[in-house]
Length: 135
Image (cartoon, rainbow, N blue to C red; front, side):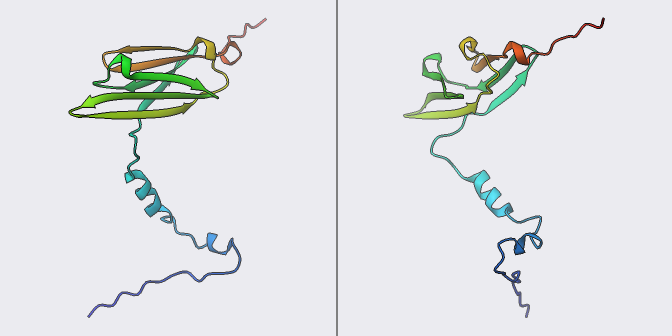
């Protein structure tokens, strides 16, 4: 007959005593739980890219009409929400993205074509790369 004994590290009064004995796997269970945890509102997957003048945020929103998309810039956050009908129910999606201060907020633009939303975030002149001439 096999017996399994569960070993636990001894506890100490010092809050830092267990740090030296922490396994590389500690916290993995919590991470896995968080990965599979379902939120009440699905998040919109986004993709980021940039060139020397702009940062781009792209989101695939298949089946979403242009009228069902809302974009709002509030306190350095780009809030994106969308909804679509699926059978009898309406599915809503949301995403908040932190926008760097180096973006020209008054020049942000968005397009929606073939189910893909592209938000263009122009970089401020101060952060754009500049060529320096040699004298």
